[in-house]
Length: 609
Image (cartoon, rainbow, N blue to C red; front, side):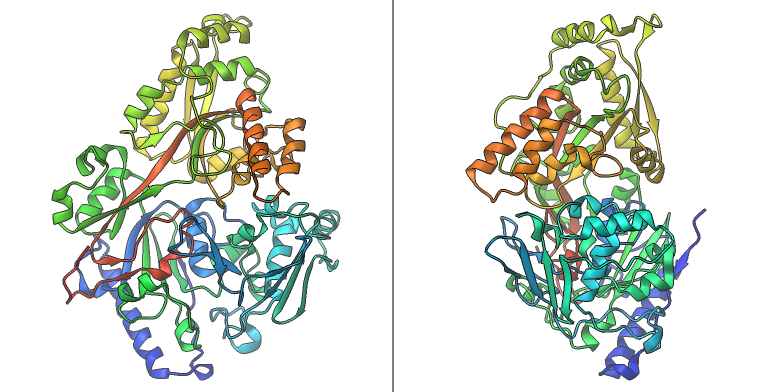
């Protein structure tokens, strides 16, 4: 059983102005913690005691280490505490980047290789015992903190899940990584030519070749500023003791129950002034950022439990599962009036996401047999699948989701056709699903995460039904999340069901899931290797946005479609509900770090839409 983690709260008033404001904030927060402790049976949305604290469900968080966070719950938590040079604008659609810890967008050399950033002054890391030189008071951010963050991802000893983003990208970084592999027990002080901080405010990054998506990478948590003092102080425990510059601080982490964050007092007290989008000004009611005093995430894997807690007012927001869809949403996709009249609101938007059934291409059964993989694809009944999901999803036509350049218009590849699927089983060497070597039906194992997710269980049963019609016996193996991802990283899963949520709005981010050098433990979880694909991908990824690049993306998608390492299952529509006291909560394909714009309506005011 995981221990409960309580984080220390430092007192650095002597270094900060406005002591009265600090005392008032501390008192308010202390009262909030007392309320949390007394409210073990539930959280009421109408309780004025937590008037400006957002309570919402989450799945288990694996880590708060920016270099190692790979699942959505962990990245959401990391992005509350750590910050990057750039962020996505909260309002703009299509999505655009804007400065966050950089003063402006970077100066880029004419050849597209050198990026020069000016880092903001007056930004401080949160107070923490790791800053021993200042008595636990957070020090000022410098450009070197970004150098160290990227260097740490490259260090093989970190075992970062984000190395694939930087591999072969920055001059000298790969050589640094090789040095860490050769001397695992020693400090590596090898200089990195393409990663320099000539002074405290200037960061210069030089690429090995043009990479148009690089600015998106710098908006991801893997490039977030991290103080070396924290890594040296906490070592392997850094994932439990995050130390960032962000709007929130981690207060407590009960891994299987609750995660509590509080507003970072250093933001206001050290004079940090953040820009607030015009549409957010009224919602924040004159407050500065962050708009919330705290966030409480409750670990709830079961959709029914989340739904009932939301209806009781114990949660401020909630996703909408399959079982509730028809009750809550009408035939036009709008919230039914009865829920609106009760004060519930709905936000939705297209998800930059593909859910898929993947075949481990290392596996001697499924990885070497294209006909078998195609047979399973053609046994996938689209009509039943969409009906099961209440039309909340669409079937992707390839590895690039709708909404991105390179998306494949038209019919599904290898559409549902049982006769064709059964003929493919003959070509695969398994007529009627029988393995000639044993005389028994072919057995495959489908690995799944989230063992306590009822909707996932129903989904898996439907997949098992599909393949049973071509004679395959599919064994379902449910895992807890850490166990599931461990199997993927060790290439030990034969077939598995997973989703990829876009890291940035470019098809390259989805196509890299099939790039050979990114195989597990990288994002190419199916371990697909095709030299032709790799060569064309390496050419496309350095091309600027253009019709020529889009054509290359389309060609790459077609190669994947023909080789069939995935069954392209779903592209969902993001939908969530919230009570009308929550303000400025909107759909965003990149929700990381957006919590700072949310606030709550005052209990004394009438809540509105």
